[in-house]
Length: 230
Ligand SMILES: O=C(O)c1cc(=O)[nH]c(=O)n1[C@@H]1O[C@H](COP(=O)(O)O)[C@@H](O)[C@H]1O
Image (cartoon, helix red, strand yellow):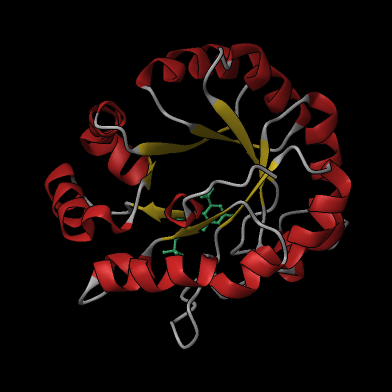
């Protein structure tokens, strides 16, 4: 676990918005309450990759959430291309071939996060997708494989963070979406936790989207989450 002195760095705001103008307006409203933004493929396919470069050039941290998963050569070269954008994190799905390829392509400064089991999945969803293992065991298996391969960090739900920490040790990052302040709507997330509880189980970063993007006062919500993470 890498402890940042600034608790704002523990919050990653997911810019799940239709376009760059909406994303820039949200970033302006949040102001200095957040330092780290996630750009996924909704925004990425709508001009968000150029925005990622601009945010990084301004000194903000960027998490490129592209969730790559393909044949090894395509992943390796895709990661190599993405490594020029100035992002701090890039996601791939936690399949061994994919993780090995991402490690080959990552370069010096881009950290690869492996998505273990999506936080919108419960055991029934995993079974429907053809997996014999319950979610907790699948997360544990993938975390062990990721550590063996040399992946920089894991994405899992905060519910698995303590067991993932035991598996991967202190030096790999644990990043948890599925975070909901007390009373917030879960939406399609099934494995959820509050920011404060996530912090207590040893996460490095939380990812929060709709509770901030849909708030009347996104800056105030971001500040309240950071206060829970301090
Ligand atoms: O890789 C991710 O960031 C991710 C992995 C996962 O298992 N679950 C998950 O929700 N995410 C992302 O985290 C964000 C969560 O958004 P909210 O549910 O709106 O807070 C979305 O951008 C998701 O794409």
